[in-house]
Length: 109
Length: 109
Length: 109
Ligand code: NI
Ligand code: NI
Ligand code: NI
Image 1 (cartoon, rainbow over the protein chains, first blue to last red):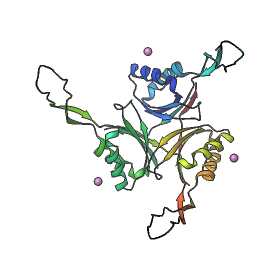
Image 2 (image 1 turned 90 degrees about the vertical axis):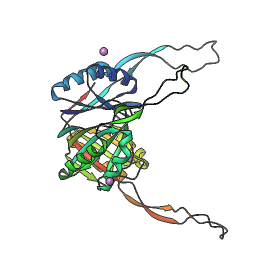
Image 3 (image 1 turned 180 degrees about the vertical axis):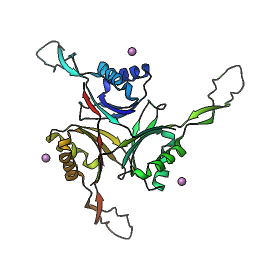
Image 4 (image 1 turned 45 degrees about the horizontal axis):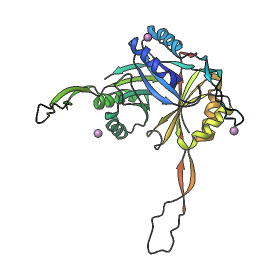
């Protein structure tokens, strides 16, 4: 058994939860901030058998990996123009920082 | 020294805190959700000497173990009846998921 | 690589964050309560290479160590006096409880 602590962005939290449930893997979520990722993140605490660690890592990677995404850039209002335009910019979203910890013992009561 | 991470239901949090204080064991509480238990849970982080691990596990088990409890079932309002009845149903409450982690070193400043 | 879990008082959280950033060390912050310290604390989760553990411990000690501080004591209003005086009292503030945990593996996606 291992304890996986995964810090991911809030925006990827719902999809990761769903995919872990689908794989019949239980996780506890802790709200967290700053640090490994830009603020607004969630720490998943996942207890899993040794032989399923790679599977969990693959699920995290598939759903939370850092990637570029086109977003409408905020355009400051310019009084000399009749309308303002929001043009798309490529930004980096997502990302996961994952620690796999050894466990001395595991108990369910 | 070991670090015990215990996920328990919110409803058992106050009694567990009290019993740990009584045993002179310090714990930090982290709000958490979902996963191991139905939502609304708390993660206790407990640092304890090796020889007291069993004692802490026994305190967690005694106060948080999953058990059946009679609760008034929600009864939907039925216009054809003069009054609605809430009749008791047996539901599962409580439960604890506990990880005992090894520690490289412990420091208090 | 090690995972450092440090429980510190909220009032020391901003300075510790700043000093870790200055040292180019990333940390995730989890809101926590009670236990090791009087309520209102923050748990820092810091992943760091083995050779930098002592450095992180020194930063935590330097910024969060338990210390005495003079604070204006709350003075109850006494109708027989024209004015109430807040006189300084020495109180204990700060403090850190730190666990250094071994890691099986570390991943960034
Ligand atoms: Ni799916
Ligand atoms: Ni008691
Ligand atoms: Ni500085």
